[in-house]
Amino acid sequence: NKSSPCIMVSSSLSATLVAIATILNCSDGFVTPKSPSINIGSTTAGSNTLPQSCNNNIFSSNPKLCLLTPTTTTTSLYSTQQEASTTTDDGETTLQSVFSTYSDDNNLMSKDQLKSIPSISDMLAEGDLLSSELDDMWDAVVSNKSDDKIDVDGFVQVYKDIDDLFEGEEEEEEVDDATLAAVSAALAAASGADETELAQAFDTLKDGGDGSSNTISFTQLRQWEEITSLVSEGMLGEDEFKSLWESSGDDGDDNMDLERFLKFNNALDDLFVFDEDEEVDEEVDDEISSDMTEEEEEETEEEEDVEVQQQQLPVITETDLPPAVLFSQLANENYLVGEAELKRWGELQDMISEGDLSQEELDVLVGRVEKAPGTDGMYVNEEGFCKLAEAIDDLFEDVDDEAADEPEQQQQDEDFRELKVELLELLEDIDKIGEEEGRLLCGLDCNELEQERVLEVVGELERETYNKVVAASNTGGGAVSKDELLGEWELLYSSSSTMKYNEGLSGLAGGLTRFGGLKQKIIGTKYLSDVEYTEQVVGKLGGKSYEVKITGDWEMKTELSLFTGKPANVMSVTPDNVVYGPRRDKADHWKSLGPMNMLLLSYIDEDLRIMRGNTSTDTLFIWKRC
Image (tube, rainbow, N blue to C red; front, side):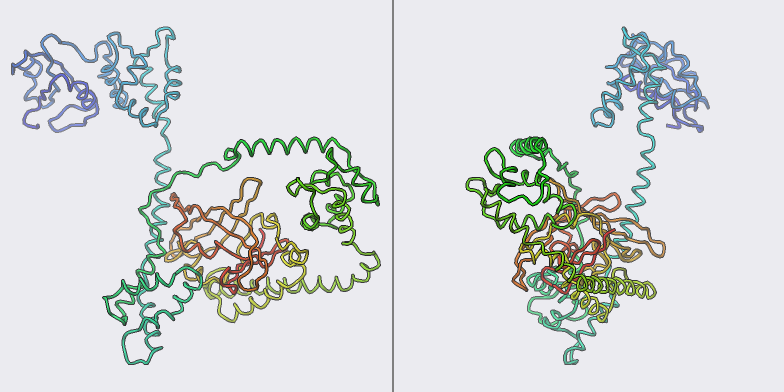
């Protein structure tokens, strides 16, 4: 109170006011800065008598802070720590005052007293400061190990050490805030519908009727290209479309005007907007060997023991041995041959290492041989082994026959190279034209003629015998090894109408940003099958660029095609998280990711992979190995 410059308080608040007094900067009738004069007077309970120090300064221009205490207590709060009220460092003065409040009569402080200070006890309780960290700081400053107490200098040092733990956090928060602001700006720019374009689309639909009305019907709206694309891609169900129609107008209204059309499109956009208020889920747990059951661990140990035993047995290097003799040398103690025993067949392993016989071809041949009873299909007896050896021999023709086929083989190689080069050059031309015209990457804005040409070349390339999908089908197995897909791939082209609609995979590009490319990393081990998409969102006109990462699981499986009735290789992806800037969201409600969730593998070689839509086979995704 400026009218009463001498402040009277009870002794129970003295500790708090001492700290306040040391940091107040009051030049207009308040406590003097830097070195406040703090006096503790005494008064009898129920008495209004002020200490003499207060009476002397009650109208002074340099007032003092007076603390009222019971009659039995008249002392200086700082006692022998006189330097606490004369220091020129406001921060250390405050710490010294706090030390005086919580220290003992000998001006020393124990660890328990240190932990009782509210600010420190709060940090310990909330986990911002660990007990082990505080113990290390304590041990570094304690002067007498036997007494285990610290003086005021040690207390100040501990506080400084605690403060050092949190350096740099403010800068990190500023970076996170900037990134979040950029993402939010991009989302805000992309969320509003372009009413001018929608009005033009409405006029087109209206003119497609008899032209006598300013409204459109349910059937006209259903035939709109945007709706047919979403339905064909599986992104919009018929029931959802009907519900949007009904909710955008009044009951019984069979026609749609422009205002209702705009309302319908806003509701349609809401289907593809994630919930910004959804809480971020917990971090994904480690999926590696910790998830193995005890039974799986025991099986793994047994397999390793078998491998060690097989390594100790010699490899059969003799060639042209009769199958029965070879079997007797390879067979285990049960007189059976399995996968481990076949690895000791030297001639067979040479065929695989030199590329004359692939592991997939061997697996197909082994699968056709009848297995020994009671072995769960893991081993063959002598009869089965002899049939396997004959089947392997039948794969190889005489050298003369191979020489005669060389010209034809060379012609096939040239045709293969020409088709592949033609496709890559076509995609390169589409991107070059798109860059000149300001179109999106990966063919997302290419015209119908360009799409038809790409589809035509892809169809020819898929039929080539060098296509590993065709090769697997010809051997009778039909399944392409998942190892063929492992690695990092870059998207060259996509004709997906959903990606065109969302201007990318995640749907986050738009407004001040645009789609800048997409990569896919496929990981597969004995225990893991992970996939990660990295989408580049590039800023334009001052917008900020950033990455969007989409993670999940994948698997390869063989299913009968709905269109051909033949076995098809299907890559199934289950998205898990979408990460952009500081945010992490669950991906199960991101409908824009739908086109990638179930695709048919139609072509693959060493560095090129082509996927088709599971329900729309004209939808293409062409990837090139990085």
